[in-house]
Length: 287
Image 1 (cartoon, rainbow, N blue to C red):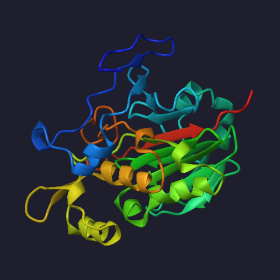
Image 2: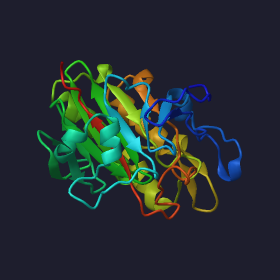
Image 3: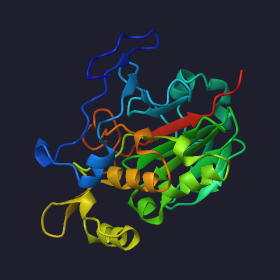
Image 4: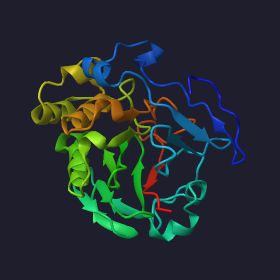
């Protein structure tokens, strides 16, 4: 998008995305960790829809994969029978499929479950499917929503990844679960949606110690931020995890949109919001 607003569409308009987050505390420019410089060379292009924006999508996934992540301006119902927004489903042309959305009781782990129909798949943080026309839904409020898509099978995964999911290998579990459906990691497209960025995700040893135990030296992903505190780049960690699982780094699209930096647009647990964002994706139905 190059920072320019796109021409409005009849559905309410496609707008420029907010500034990406590669800044440190108090708005100061910060050097990205080494791993982020290797993989996250630039923010992936996203498109905001509606006035005010109700949802966004990735240019890297559109138009082949119907998908969206809601904003705080799009009413969601995570406490109801399925965590989806009628507005987003309608925007995706999925209104008739609303009762068939597949979702999980997310527990901050790395369990992957295959969905063949709508409704709850039980406890899981990764949902995979090879069923066209079946929307998958992930709910977040700072954690990373990751969508993986192999158009060659086709096969689809939606993952909820926080620090605990990172430690237990949720991103790799998503790749492996797709591979079990016949997908090829080098052919996969990956997208990391709005989530807390390295500018705002302050953690202590409760997070850093398990991260080091699971993944080795963490210095490439952390920036000291006071005594016993660090800023953690979960984006870079999970980009690396996806790459190590076989996904081509050039096919990993990261919006680099920090939920904590944009409370006017996104819900953020760290900023005290009790709302949730919903990421939806659906394999297209062959015509």
